[in-house]
Image (cartoon, rainbow, N blue to C red; front, side, top):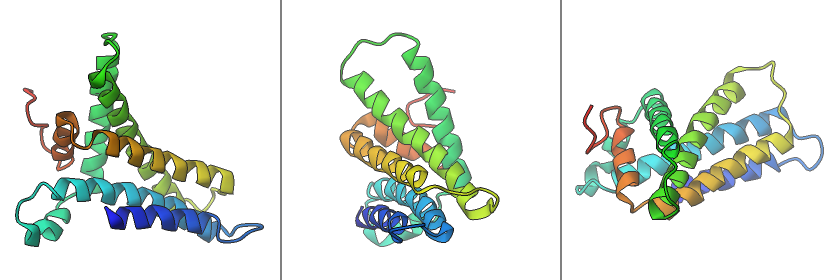
Amino acid sequence: MAFADDLLEQAQHLANRERKEPRQASLRRAVSTAYYALFHLLISEATLNWKRVEYRDVLARVFEHGKMKSACRKKMGELTGYYKTNPRAGSELTAAQHLHRVAQTFVEAQNNRHAADYDNSRVWARTDVLAEIESVANAFRSWRAIRNESVAQAFLVSLFGGKEPGREQ
């Protein structure tokens, strides 16, 4: 996770690089870097489950942005349905809330990264960029709170683009 943490720190640095009148290039790179921090956090967590350490980097290259975004959207939909059942407070609900934050943040961060990298008509404000980075930092905290839960591990597998383990469809 060190690389993901470094990317998140780099995003913060870029957002605060110029004290007055931050450059759009710095703010845009901060938004993009924040997304890549979360992207690499999830990939790193997934590949840690691979027994053969020497192949983890190769396995990491299998992940695709679009498939990961689709998996996150699907998970958000499932969790929204779960919330409609009025689940009782407890560890299952807490894990669901953390996982929802991770999935939602991933989708939003990817959309913002795309805008930062390709939409030159958009002007970024430092406050918006810092809020985006904080959102990603919150997703990091949520992930770390649930990373060993079965629901979180199944979610990691779904990021490959296939069906989530243990789910009949």
